[in-house]
Image (tube, rainbow, N blue to C red; front, side, top):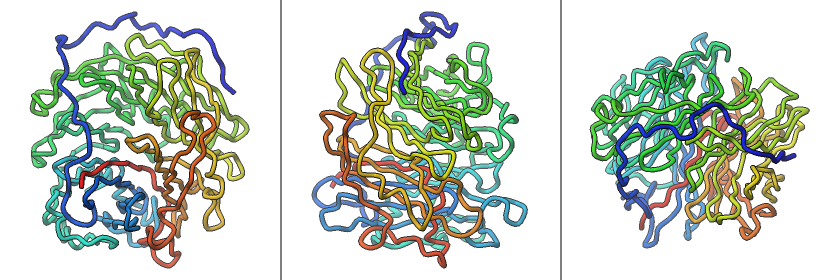
Length: 485
Protein backbone atom coordinates (compact mmCIF):
# COMPACT_ATOMS: atom_id res chain seq x y z
CA UNK A 1 0.00 0.00 0.00
CA UNK A 2 1.37 3.41 -0.94
CA UNK A 3 1.63 6.25 1.50
CA UNK A 4 1.51 9.79 0.12
CA UNK A 5 2.63 12.91 1.90
CA UNK A 6 4.90 15.90 1.98
CA UNK A 7 8.65 15.70 1.59
CA UNK A 8 10.69 14.81 4.65
CA UNK A 9 13.83 16.79 5.38
CA UNK A 10 16.86 14.96 6.71
CA UNK A 11 18.98 17.77 7.97
CA UNK A 12 21.12 18.44 4.88
CA UNK A 13 21.69 21.95 3.65
CA UNK A 14 19.05 23.08 1.14
CA UNK A 15 21.75 23.28 -1.49
CA UNK A 16 24.98 21.42 -0.97
CA UNK A 17 27.88 23.54 -2.17
CA UNK A 18 29.38 22.61 -5.51
CA UNK A 19 32.59 20.71 -4.96
CA UNK A 20 33.94 21.24 -8.45
CA UNK A 21 33.96 24.27 -10.75
CA UNK A 22 30.72 24.45 -12.72
CA UNK A 23 31.24 23.51 -16.34
CA UNK A 24 29.24 21.89 -19.08
CA UNK A 25 29.81 18.11 -18.83
CA UNK A 26 30.98 16.38 -22.00
CA UNK A 27 28.37 14.61 -24.13
CA UNK A 28 27.80 11.02 -23.11
CA UNK A 29 28.19 8.19 -25.63
CA UNK A 30 24.89 7.12 -27.18
CA UNK A 31 23.76 4.38 -29.51
CA UNK A 32 24.85 0.75 -29.81
CA UNK A 33 28.23 -0.57 -28.75
CA UNK A 34 30.62 -0.87 -31.72
CA UNK A 35 30.42 -4.24 -33.46
CA UNK A 36 32.51 -7.03 -31.96
CA UNK A 37 33.75 -9.83 -34.19
CA UNK A 38 32.86 -13.38 -33.29
CA UNK A 39 29.60 -15.19 -32.81
CA UNK A 40 29.38 -14.85 -29.03
CA UNK A 41 29.05 -11.06 -29.01
CA UNK A 42 28.53 -10.37 -32.72
CA UNK A 43 25.48 -9.41 -34.77
CA UNK A 44 24.28 -9.65 -38.35
CA UNK A 45 23.63 -6.57 -40.45
CA UNK A 46 21.41 -4.96 -37.82
CA UNK A 47 22.10 -4.14 -34.20
CA UNK A 48 21.11 -6.70 -31.60
CA UNK A 49 20.41 -6.91 -27.91
CA UNK A 50 22.56 -9.09 -25.69
CA UNK A 51 21.75 -10.18 -22.15
CA UNK A 52 24.84 -10.70 -19.98
CA UNK A 53 24.41 -12.69 -16.77
CA UNK A 54 26.65 -13.40 -13.79
CA UNK A 55 25.89 -16.79 -12.27
CA UNK A 56 27.40 -15.64 -9.01
CA UNK A 57 27.57 -18.85 -6.97
CA UNK A 58 28.26 -21.09 -9.94
CA UNK A 59 31.25 -19.13 -11.29
CA UNK A 60 30.00 -18.65 -14.83
CA UNK A 61 29.09 -15.83 -17.18
CA UNK A 62 26.25 -16.48 -19.65
CA UNK A 63 25.30 -14.57 -22.81
CA UNK A 64 21.95 -14.56 -24.63
CA UNK A 65 20.47 -12.78 -27.66
CA UNK A 66 16.72 -12.84 -26.97
CA UNK A 67 15.66 -11.17 -30.23
CA UNK A 68 18.07 -12.96 -32.57
CA UNK A 69 16.23 -13.24 -35.93
CA UNK A 70 17.87 -16.60 -36.65
CA UNK A 71 16.88 -18.06 -33.30
CA UNK A 72 20.47 -18.19 -32.03
CA UNK A 73 19.37 -17.22 -28.53
CA UNK A 74 22.13 -18.89 -26.54
CA UNK A 75 25.43 -17.25 -27.44
CA UNK A 76 27.50 -19.19 -24.96
CA UNK A 77 29.13 -19.00 -21.55
CA UNK A 78 32.53 -18.37 -20.02
CA UNK A 79 33.70 -20.46 -17.07
CA UNK A 80 35.06 -18.40 -14.18
CA UNK A 81 35.87 -21.05 -11.59
CA UNK A 82 39.45 -19.91 -11.14
CA UNK A 83 39.94 -21.55 -7.73
CA UNK A 84 37.90 -24.76 -8.04
CA UNK A 85 36.16 -26.16 -5.01
CA UNK A 86 37.04 -29.72 -4.10
CA UNK A 87 33.31 -30.35 -3.98
CA UNK A 88 31.97 -29.44 -7.47
CA UNK A 89 28.75 -27.55 -7.29
CA UNK A 90 29.19 -26.80 -3.61
CA UNK A 91 29.18 -23.30 -2.27
CA UNK A 92 30.16 -21.16 0.62
CA UNK A 93 31.63 -23.10 3.49
CA UNK A 94 32.78 -26.22 1.66
CA UNK A 95 36.29 -27.28 2.68
CA UNK A 96 35.96 -24.80 5.52
CA UNK A 97 37.29 -22.10 3.23
CA UNK A 98 34.39 -20.86 1.12
CA UNK A 99 36.55 -20.57 -1.99
CA UNK A 100 34.26 -18.79 -4.43
CA UNK A 101 35.34 -16.63 -7.34
CA UNK A 102 31.87 -15.10 -7.47
CA UNK A 103 31.64 -13.09 -10.69
CA UNK A 104 29.31 -10.19 -10.08
CA UNK A 105 29.44 -6.76 -11.74
CA UNK A 106 29.56 -6.81 -15.57
CA UNK A 107 30.23 -4.16 -18.20
CA UNK A 108 30.74 -4.19 -21.96
CA UNK A 109 32.87 -1.32 -23.30
CA UNK A 110 34.77 -0.72 -26.54
CA UNK A 111 37.77 -2.30 -24.80
CA UNK A 112 36.01 -5.60 -24.16
CA UNK A 113 33.90 -7.47 -21.64
CA UNK A 114 34.71 -6.76 -18.00
CA UNK A 115 33.69 -8.82 -14.97
CA UNK A 116 34.47 -8.27 -11.30
CA UNK A 117 35.46 -11.48 -9.52
CA UNK A 118 35.00 -10.56 -5.90
CA UNK A 119 36.90 -13.49 -4.37
CA UNK A 120 39.79 -14.08 -6.76
CA UNK A 121 42.61 -14.61 -5.92
CA UNK A 122 41.31 -14.35 -2.31
CA UNK A 123 38.23 -12.77 -0.71
CA UNK A 124 40.44 -9.87 0.38
CA UNK A 125 41.94 -9.31 -3.07
CA UNK A 126 39.18 -9.16 -5.67
CA UNK A 127 40.06 -8.71 -9.34
CA UNK A 128 38.75 -7.21 -12.55
CA UNK A 129 38.98 -9.51 -15.56
CA UNK A 130 38.88 -8.01 -19.06
CA UNK A 131 38.17 -10.22 -22.05
CA UNK A 132 39.46 -8.05 -24.93
CA UNK A 133 37.40 -7.65 -28.08
CA UNK A 134 39.87 -9.69 -30.10
CA UNK A 135 39.46 -12.61 -27.65
CA UNK A 136 35.99 -13.22 -29.10
CA UNK A 137 37.01 -13.20 -32.77
CA UNK A 138 37.16 -16.97 -33.24
CA UNK A 139 34.72 -18.07 -30.57
CA UNK A 140 31.71 -19.94 -32.01
CA UNK A 141 28.32 -19.39 -30.47
CA UNK A 142 26.53 -21.85 -28.24
CA UNK A 143 29.46 -23.26 -26.28
CA UNK A 144 30.86 -23.00 -22.79
CA UNK A 145 34.41 -21.65 -22.94
CA UNK A 146 36.26 -23.43 -20.12
CA UNK A 147 38.72 -21.67 -17.86
CA UNK A 148 41.53 -23.78 -19.32
CA UNK A 149 41.34 -21.82 -22.58
CA UNK A 150 42.59 -18.64 -20.91
CA UNK A 151 43.85 -19.59 -17.45
CA UNK A 152 46.28 -22.24 -16.17
CA UNK A 153 48.69 -22.57 -13.25
CA UNK A 154 47.68 -19.19 -11.88
CA UNK A 155 48.46 -17.31 -15.12
CA UNK A 156 46.12 -15.74 -17.70
CA UNK A 157 46.56 -15.96 -21.46
CA UNK A 158 44.87 -13.42 -23.73
CA UNK A 159 42.82 -12.06 -20.82
CA UNK A 160 43.79 -9.11 -18.64
CA UNK A 161 43.52 -9.51 -14.87
CA UNK A 162 43.83 -6.47 -12.62
CA UNK A 163 44.17 -7.26 -8.92
CA UNK A 164 42.10 -4.64 -7.12
CA UNK A 165 43.61 -5.40 -3.70
CA UNK A 166 40.28 -4.70 -2.02
CA UNK A 167 37.77 -6.60 0.08
CA UNK A 168 34.57 -7.44 -1.81
CA UNK A 169 34.68 -5.24 -4.92
CA UNK A 170 31.24 -5.98 -6.33
CA UNK A 171 29.40 -3.38 -8.42
CA UNK A 172 30.75 -1.84 -11.62
CA UNK A 173 29.44 1.07 -13.69
CA UNK A 174 30.86 2.46 -16.97
CA UNK A 175 31.20 6.25 -16.64
CA UNK A 176 32.61 8.20 -19.59
CA UNK A 177 35.58 6.09 -20.75
CA UNK A 178 36.33 4.66 -17.28
CA UNK A 179 34.89 1.97 -15.02
CA UNK A 180 33.76 2.89 -11.51
CA UNK A 181 33.69 -0.04 -9.06
CA UNK A 182 31.77 0.05 -5.79
CA UNK A 183 33.74 -1.78 -3.09
CA UNK A 184 31.80 -3.14 -0.11
CA UNK A 185 34.98 -3.33 2.02
CA UNK A 186 33.31 -5.60 4.58
CA UNK A 187 32.85 -9.36 4.64
CA UNK A 188 29.49 -10.24 3.12
CA UNK A 189 29.46 -13.55 4.99
CA UNK A 190 30.08 -11.92 8.38
CA UNK A 191 27.15 -10.80 10.56
CA UNK A 192 25.60 -7.60 9.32
CA UNK A 193 26.31 -5.75 12.55
CA UNK A 194 30.01 -5.96 11.61
CA UNK A 195 29.54 -3.97 8.36
CA UNK A 196 31.04 -0.86 9.90
CA UNK A 197 33.94 -0.17 7.55
CA UNK A 198 33.62 2.67 5.02
CA UNK A 199 33.38 1.50 1.43
CA UNK A 200 35.46 2.66 -1.50
CA UNK A 201 35.13 3.70 -5.10
CA UNK A 202 37.71 2.45 -7.57
CA UNK A 203 38.28 4.23 -10.89
CA UNK A 204 39.76 2.01 -13.60
CA UNK A 205 40.87 2.80 -17.13
CA UNK A 206 39.70 -0.18 -19.24
CA UNK A 207 42.01 0.89 -22.07
CA UNK A 208 44.98 0.42 -19.72
CA UNK A 209 44.04 -2.73 -17.78
CA UNK A 210 47.41 -3.04 -16.06
CA UNK A 211 47.30 0.44 -14.50
CA UNK A 212 46.45 0.65 -10.80
CA UNK A 213 42.98 2.02 -10.07
CA UNK A 214 42.34 5.36 -8.48
CA UNK A 215 40.91 4.81 -4.98
CA UNK A 216 38.32 7.02 -3.27
CA UNK A 217 37.90 6.30 0.44
CA UNK A 218 34.29 7.02 1.38
CA UNK A 219 35.13 7.66 5.03
CA UNK A 220 34.64 11.43 5.10
CA UNK A 221 31.84 12.77 2.95
CA UNK A 222 31.05 16.08 4.62
CA UNK A 223 31.91 14.45 7.93
CA UNK A 224 30.08 11.14 7.39
CA UNK A 225 30.97 7.74 5.95
CA UNK A 226 29.39 5.37 3.46
CA UNK A 227 29.76 1.95 5.08
CA UNK A 228 29.42 -1.09 2.85
CA UNK A 229 29.26 0.57 -0.57
CA UNK A 230 26.87 -1.23 -2.90
CA UNK A 231 25.29 -0.24 -6.25
CA UNK A 232 26.68 2.82 -8.04
CA UNK A 233 24.55 4.84 -10.47
CA UNK A 234 25.28 7.86 -12.63
CA UNK A 235 23.08 10.88 -11.94
CA UNK A 236 24.75 13.12 -14.51
CA UNK A 237 28.09 13.52 -16.24
CA UNK A 238 29.60 14.94 -13.06
CA UNK A 239 27.67 13.24 -10.26
CA UNK A 240 27.30 9.68 -8.94
CA UNK A 241 25.19 8.15 -6.20
CA UNK A 242 25.71 4.89 -4.37
CA UNK A 243 23.96 2.80 -1.74
CA UNK A 244 25.55 2.42 1.69
CA UNK A 245 24.26 -0.91 2.95
CA UNK A 246 26.34 -0.92 6.12
CA UNK A 247 24.76 2.23 7.57
CA UNK A 248 21.52 2.41 5.51
CA UNK A 249 22.19 5.63 3.62
CA UNK A 250 22.91 7.08 0.18
CA UNK A 251 26.20 8.73 -0.77
CA UNK A 252 26.31 11.43 -3.43
CA UNK A 253 29.64 12.46 -4.95
CA UNK A 254 30.71 15.00 -7.52
CA UNK A 255 33.36 13.83 -9.95
CA UNK A 256 35.52 15.49 -12.60
CA UNK A 257 35.29 14.63 -16.29
CA UNK A 258 36.71 11.12 -16.06
CA UNK A 259 37.67 11.07 -19.74
CA UNK A 260 40.04 13.98 -19.14
CA UNK A 261 41.84 12.54 -16.10
CA UNK A 262 43.95 9.56 -15.16
CA UNK A 263 42.33 7.37 -12.49
CA UNK A 264 44.50 8.63 -9.60
CA UNK A 265 43.99 12.27 -10.57
CA UNK A 266 40.24 11.80 -10.92
CA UNK A 267 40.00 10.03 -7.55
CA UNK A 268 41.74 12.91 -5.80
CA UNK A 269 39.00 15.33 -6.94
CA UNK A 270 35.98 13.38 -5.69
CA UNK A 271 33.96 14.72 -2.77
CA UNK A 272 30.37 14.58 -1.61
CA UNK A 273 27.85 14.07 1.18
CA UNK A 274 25.60 11.47 2.82
CA UNK A 275 21.80 11.31 2.70
CA UNK A 276 20.45 9.08 5.50
CA UNK A 277 17.33 7.00 4.95
CA UNK A 278 14.69 8.08 7.51
CA UNK A 279 13.87 5.46 10.09
CA UNK A 280 16.22 2.87 8.62
CA UNK A 281 17.51 0.56 11.31
CA UNK A 282 20.62 -1.64 11.28
CA UNK A 283 20.01 -4.78 9.33
CA UNK A 284 17.82 -3.21 6.65
CA UNK A 285 18.90 -3.75 3.04
CA UNK A 286 19.76 -0.50 1.28
CA UNK A 287 21.63 -2.03 -1.63
CA UNK A 288 19.86 -0.95 -4.85
CA UNK A 289 18.81 2.36 -6.30
CA UNK A 290 17.89 3.81 -9.69
CA UNK A 291 18.37 7.25 -11.19
CA UNK A 292 15.64 9.03 -13.12
CA UNK A 293 16.18 11.53 -15.91
CA UNK A 294 15.49 14.48 -13.63
CA UNK A 295 18.42 14.08 -11.25
CA UNK A 296 16.47 12.14 -8.64
CA UNK A 297 16.73 8.65 -7.18
CA UNK A 298 14.46 5.77 -6.27
CA UNK A 299 15.89 3.89 -3.28
CA UNK A 300 14.91 0.34 -2.26
CA UNK A 301 14.84 -0.19 1.51
CA UNK A 302 13.91 -3.75 2.46
CA UNK A 303 14.19 -6.27 5.26
CA UNK A 304 16.99 -8.84 5.53
CA UNK A 305 16.49 -12.44 4.49
CA UNK A 306 15.64 -13.75 7.96
CA UNK A 307 12.99 -11.08 8.77
CA UNK A 308 9.56 -12.57 8.05
CA UNK A 309 7.45 -9.62 9.14
CA UNK A 310 9.01 -6.30 8.18
CA UNK A 311 7.69 -4.21 5.30
CA UNK A 312 9.64 -2.90 2.34
CA UNK A 313 9.81 0.76 1.34
CA UNK A 314 10.61 2.67 -1.83
CA UNK A 315 11.81 6.23 -1.34
CA UNK A 316 12.04 9.00 -3.95
CA UNK A 317 15.10 11.02 -2.94
CA UNK A 318 16.39 14.40 -4.07
CA UNK A 319 20.17 13.94 -3.84
CA UNK A 320 20.80 17.69 -3.84
CA UNK A 321 18.85 18.41 -0.66
CA UNK A 322 18.54 14.88 0.80
CA UNK A 323 14.76 15.35 0.97
CA UNK A 324 12.57 12.30 0.39
CA UNK A 325 8.92 11.96 -0.44
CA UNK A 326 6.79 9.72 1.74
CA UNK A 327 7.56 6.18 0.66
CA UNK A 328 5.61 3.46 -1.02
CA UNK A 329 5.16 0.82 1.68
CA UNK A 330 4.28 -2.77 0.96
CA UNK A 331 4.79 -6.28 2.23
CA UNK A 332 4.75 -7.50 5.79
CA UNK A 333 3.99 -11.01 6.96
CA UNK A 334 6.96 -12.37 5.07
CA UNK A 335 6.61 -10.32 1.89
CA UNK A 336 8.76 -7.57 0.51
CA UNK A 337 12.30 -8.91 0.09
CA UNK A 338 13.64 -6.47 -2.48
CA UNK A 339 16.05 -7.03 -5.31
CA UNK A 340 16.96 -4.54 -7.99
CA UNK A 341 15.02 -1.41 -8.95
CA UNK A 342 15.26 0.05 -12.48
CA UNK A 343 13.78 3.10 -14.18
CA UNK A 344 11.35 2.53 -17.02
CA UNK A 345 12.21 4.82 -19.98
CA UNK A 346 9.63 7.05 -21.58
CA UNK A 347 8.09 8.93 -18.64
CA UNK A 348 6.56 12.39 -18.96
CA UNK A 349 6.56 15.55 -16.87
CA UNK A 350 3.60 14.35 -14.81
CA UNK A 351 4.50 10.77 -13.93
CA UNK A 352 7.50 8.45 -13.83
CA UNK A 353 7.67 4.70 -13.46
CA UNK A 354 10.07 2.13 -12.05
CA UNK A 355 10.19 -1.65 -11.90
CA UNK A 356 11.15 -3.44 -8.68
CA UNK A 357 12.09 -7.09 -8.18
CA UNK A 358 10.07 -8.35 -5.22
CA UNK A 359 10.68 -11.66 -3.54
CA UNK A 360 9.40 -13.08 -0.29
CA UNK A 361 10.88 -14.09 3.02
CA UNK A 362 9.02 -17.38 2.96
CA UNK A 363 8.65 -19.87 0.12
CA UNK A 364 4.88 -19.45 -0.24
CA UNK A 365 4.92 -15.68 -0.45
CA UNK A 366 4.09 -13.35 -3.30
CA UNK A 367 6.82 -12.90 -5.89
CA UNK A 368 6.99 -10.75 -9.01
CA UNK A 369 8.09 -7.51 -10.64
CA UNK A 370 6.21 -4.53 -9.22
CA UNK A 371 5.42 -1.31 -11.08
CA UNK A 372 5.95 1.88 -9.09
CA UNK A 373 4.51 5.23 -10.17
CA UNK A 374 5.27 8.73 -8.99
CA UNK A 375 2.77 11.29 -10.25
CA UNK A 376 4.13 14.09 -8.07
CA UNK A 377 2.94 13.01 -4.62
CA UNK A 378 5.50 10.36 -3.90
CA UNK A 379 5.91 6.81 -5.19
CA UNK A 380 3.22 4.18 -4.95
CA UNK A 381 3.00 0.59 -6.11
CA UNK A 382 0.41 0.66 -8.88
CA UNK A 383 0.62 -2.86 -10.31
CA UNK A 384 2.85 -5.77 -11.24
CA UNK A 385 4.00 -7.22 -14.54
CA UNK A 386 1.47 -9.75 -15.72
CA UNK A 387 2.58 -12.97 -17.40
CA UNK A 388 5.35 -13.94 -14.97
CA UNK A 389 3.63 -16.28 -12.53
CA UNK A 390 4.12 -19.50 -14.49
CA UNK A 391 7.85 -18.78 -14.85
CA UNK A 392 8.58 -18.39 -11.14
CA UNK A 393 8.59 -22.06 -10.27
CA UNK A 394 11.25 -24.49 -11.48
CA UNK A 395 12.58 -27.85 -10.37
CA UNK A 396 9.86 -28.05 -7.74
CA UNK A 397 10.94 -24.87 -5.96
CA UNK A 398 9.70 -21.26 -6.08
CA UNK A 399 11.94 -18.68 -7.70
CA UNK A 400 12.32 -15.05 -6.68
CA UNK A 401 13.10 -12.24 -9.13
CA UNK A 402 16.27 -10.47 -8.05
CA UNK A 403 18.17 -8.89 -10.97
CA UNK A 404 16.50 -6.62 -13.54
CA UNK A 405 17.59 -4.81 -16.70
CA UNK A 406 15.46 -2.90 -19.21
CA UNK A 407 16.27 -2.80 -22.93
CA UNK A 408 17.29 0.60 -24.31
CA UNK A 409 14.00 0.84 -26.23
CA UNK A 410 12.03 0.26 -23.03
CA UNK A 411 10.15 -2.64 -24.61
CA UNK A 412 12.12 -5.58 -23.21
CA UNK A 413 12.95 -6.74 -19.69
CA UNK A 414 15.58 -9.24 -18.51
CA UNK A 415 15.06 -10.94 -15.14
CA UNK A 416 17.40 -13.08 -13.07
CA UNK A 417 15.35 -15.29 -10.73
CA UNK A 418 16.78 -17.73 -8.23
CA UNK A 419 15.68 -19.91 -5.31
CA UNK A 420 14.59 -18.25 -2.08
CA UNK A 421 17.77 -19.45 -0.37
CA UNK A 422 20.51 -20.71 -2.68
CA UNK A 423 21.54 -24.26 -1.80
CA UNK A 424 25.11 -24.70 -0.59
CA UNK A 425 25.39 -27.95 -2.52
CA UNK A 426 23.57 -29.49 -5.45
CA UNK A 427 21.68 -27.77 -8.23
CA UNK A 428 19.79 -24.50 -8.13
CA UNK A 429 17.03 -24.20 -10.69
CA UNK A 430 17.27 -20.47 -11.26
CA UNK A 431 16.19 -18.96 -14.56
CA UNK A 432 17.06 -16.03 -16.78
CA UNK A 433 13.82 -14.69 -18.24
CA UNK A 434 13.11 -12.29 -21.08
CA UNK A 435 9.82 -10.41 -21.33
CA UNK A 436 8.51 -8.37 -24.25
CA UNK A 437 6.48 -5.67 -22.51
CA UNK A 438 2.97 -4.95 -23.73
CA UNK A 439 0.69 -2.04 -22.80
CA UNK A 440 3.46 0.51 -22.24
CA UNK A 441 0.93 3.36 -22.58
CA UNK A 442 -0.25 2.43 -19.07
CA UNK A 443 2.73 0.91 -17.22
CA UNK A 444 0.62 0.11 -14.18
CA UNK A 445 -1.31 -2.52 -16.16
CA UNK A 446 1.54 -3.79 -18.33
CA UNK A 447 1.86 -7.44 -19.18
CA UNK A 448 4.74 -9.34 -20.73
CA UNK A 449 5.21 -12.23 -23.10
CA UNK A 450 7.87 -14.13 -21.17
CA UNK A 451 10.32 -16.75 -22.40
CA UNK A 452 12.90 -18.73 -20.46
CA UNK A 453 16.36 -18.00 -21.85
CA UNK A 454 17.66 -20.99 -19.87
CA UNK A 455 15.04 -23.57 -20.82
CA UNK A 456 17.02 -25.67 -23.29
CA UNK A 457 17.84 -25.35 -26.99
CA UNK A 458 17.67 -23.00 -28.82
CA UNK A 459 17.97 -21.12 -25.52
CA UNK A 460 20.61 -21.88 -22.92
CA UNK A 461 20.99 -25.40 -21.51
CA UNK A 462 18.50 -26.30 -18.81
CA UNK A 463 19.75 -27.26 -15.35
CA UNK A 464 21.03 -30.81 -15.24
CA UNK A 465 21.25 -32.03 -11.62
CA UNK A 466 24.23 -34.21 -12.61
CA UNK A 467 26.21 -31.40 -14.26
CA UNK A 468 27.43 -28.60 -11.95
CA UNK A 469 28.31 -26.46 -14.99
CA UNK A 470 24.58 -25.97 -15.57
CA UNK A 471 23.52 -25.11 -12.00
CA UNK A 472 21.85 -21.72 -11.58
CA UNK A 473 21.71 -20.93 -7.89
CA UNK A 474 22.12 -17.16 -8.11
CA UNK A 475 21.71 -15.30 -11.44
CA UNK A 476 22.26 -12.11 -9.47
CA UNK A 477 23.39 -9.69 -12.19
CA UNK A 478 21.81 -9.10 -15.60
CA UNK A 479 22.81 -6.42 -18.08
CA UNK A 480 21.17 -5.63 -21.42
CA UNK A 481 23.45 -4.04 -24.03
CA UNK A 482 22.89 -3.09 -27.64
CA UNK A 483 25.64 -4.08 -30.07
CA UNK A 484 25.96 -2.68 -33.59
CA UNK A 485 25.76 -4.96 -36.62
